[in-house]
Length: 195
Image 1: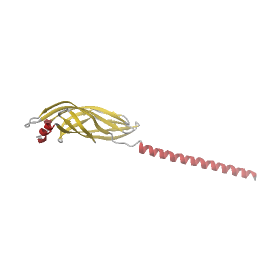
Image 2: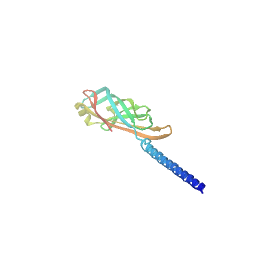
Image 3: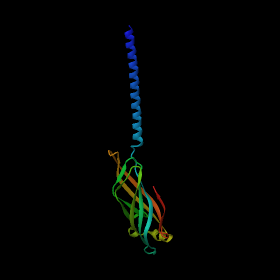
């Protein structure tokens, strides 16, 4: 009889060890599942990069303020910033940035393809030649030139892919819409706002 109590004691101890081992495996699997879900929800989210005009300078500006045929030509140098908040590189294709006056496109500049590294900002220089020759008869142009302020807007779309961990790729589109004022007296851009 003493042998059976020892055997039963060993089996009880073995069962307790097996139950603890199984509990540790279950807790480990739950912890790994929770950490994987958090990783997917927080890190693996693909967000649209943000494109903004960082700074715009007027290189040349020629004005004709005659009331019969007001006109202007200008050359702008702009710094376009691409802010990538993803945990992967954003590689974008060639694109254009346009400048508009009164809702009419008056000039464009090339944005060359590049990539913004993960969680960083890429700065791209763009030169735009703009002219009022594309404008139809605009009754406000003469008064705007006389007032010394031209209301301009800028637009750009960057299409590309976010490359995450050399495995995942997701197409994303970054869009820029900015408004600004060209002060013709100081030949400077003011009140630049992007969204």
